[in-house]
Image 1 (cartoon, rainbow, N blue to C red):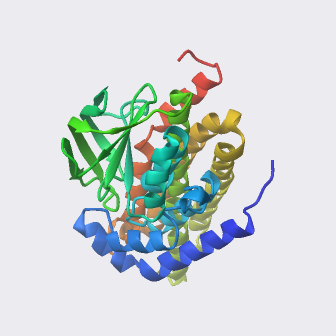
Image 2 (image 1 turned 135 degrees about the vertical axis):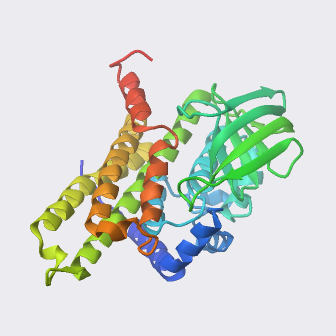
Length: 364
């Protein structure tokens, strides 16, 4: 199947990349990473003003009414810039979950606030992604108890949407009683994870879906596509930086880009990376329009792009030689981003296993 981005998607990509190039130069990104919190409130507010927070919020609730493919275009641009802002949770998984699971009254209350960027919702999975650490919560009527480690995009969040193993979802206010969140800086200093604890926390239960498990799977798969797109952008950035460095680094009286070994490494990176874009785009398109393919496509995109990202991060660092291991080049910011993406919402092994189960190749 062949398809290309629409004019609107190209405009989204160009405007977002233009903003990030202007407002997030390398030195600014380094400074934010050194702070260790991985969140730039300034950039989140400005991106929300550009409409990024409301990309997947339906138009009748004040959003752009776009789909997963549009969000994947934005995620790739954010990954390319190494942007220290929450996206997969509050801009993609949360509005999708509310649209699929919440009542009409809940949607009318929450979605406009999400589109405006004032309600920033992290999404926590209590199982179903193969995560390590605590992931055990109990929903008792309208209160939630337990703890979840490694929650993505919870730093700076106003709410946490917890998706239970059976697919039910519960929304808690971070500043409300019974909710404790602790930010834990990770390997990727542009994006921390959080430990969230619930102690009989009051929650709003989202129970309007006819098939809660299927809705939860769609939300998780959308998140996986966003992480694959983020990895794609970060890997492309590392490739571009390696090529640019090779054109200016001189050894033995010649730029190293003229050396056959460097040419081969650059060509290998480009050859491995280019097909990933089609994989990510198809997985995102399937999430919007081909539900029978969506789950398997998301699993394969997440798994394969993670493997290619590891290859590119290694080769790009080798092209830089010893400079690639220094903070001066900033290369480690994208290296670490790719590494964290690999394990969030399911490792390549986990995603391949789920795809095999979905296709009947192995037992669940």
